[in-house]
Amino acid sequence: MFTGIIEDIGELEYKDTKTFIVSTILDDINVSDSISVNGICLTVENIEKKYNKNFLKFSVSLETLKRTNLGVVKIKDKLNLERSLKLGLRLHGHIVTGHIDTTIKLIKIKNEEFIFELPAEFEKYIVEKGSVALDGISLTVAKKLKDSFSVAVIPYTLNHTTLKYKKPADVFNLEVDILAKYIESLTNKDKKEKIDLKFLKEYGFA
Image (cartoon, rainbow, N blue to C red; front, side):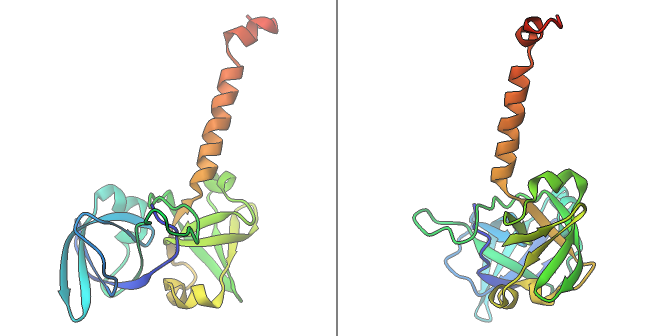
């Protein structure tokens, strides 16, 4: 579990169809730890220290490559990194699982607002003043339209994440708020339980 507060901007050092190696200044990392890489929960398989940096090796499945932007990142690209949340610490962002829902494109940047496309199937999870994770960054929805939404980015976030390198048409990993998914699941469950055979008989439909 993560918070969406980026700890370091790492760099992609190597990639093939199964393996990624990312360099970082972060320490206190062990083999088998979970690390958020551009918002994707990946497991550290090996650590090599050189040039005052840690080089973290990850294995990536084909499903992850298809569902996320790891399939399009290139060597030397910058990546948002966050170590997993420790119990007892403050939750400064919001609850982020590291399981990407889809990828979306950045439409444009207008002053401090980043405007993104909004696929119809995820529209129900996006609300103004609600939380989203974009490339692992916890952000607040500023505005929501029918097929797009925007987030307002403060200077600190811009300077301490990969947002400062982004431009229109770039692809971002989107993870919607897990709480919205739970609410949807509970709501749908209640609806199914209410419309059963007993309900139909009571109202003359069976």
